[in-house]
Length: 112
Length: 119
Image (cartoon, rainbow over all chains, first blue to last red; front, side, top):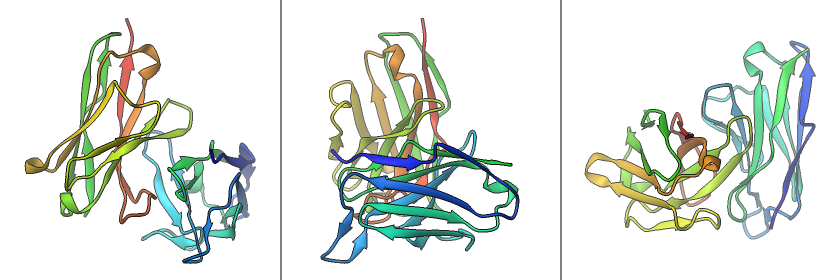
């Protein structure tokens, strides 16, 4: 079974600074037939459902601010939030959909 | 706009059954697969499986076979999750979530239904 591991478990970043969250898959999630990485990122605020931010590892979902970006390929992926805003405080999850959907354990992002 | 509206929180006793609804609007219900995702409060997300809204055929992830049943009423664009023989460890938030195509990332989510199992 694929295992998704995020790092760090939590981090604190100052307003306006950059936040970087990593996600590592135990198996490759790049489909070489279509050159797509089957990796998504979600944001979850307290009391709310997850919200899709990024799919195909780097494609922003509709309405997502461009300060959110995704990168990586194969087994190693990164979500970067450039110019952190107060409303970005949340838990962030990665999810692979190369096989049966599986989420990372989550990374809690707080303000420093 | 696409909306998935779920039923309110439930408090049930061990051994009881519960049925959660997920009403869709803003799109053609039968064109998109619906999924169910569980989240124990304060913990991670666990995919439970999906239901083909065109055929009504459900698929369950290992660990959610037997006591969990996905169903539909397409006349009211609603999906249901029924859990029988409730256990304390079933206490969780249950989300319905849509996939936009045949790739399993979830573009719209219901607001979640908290099921609390307590004697």
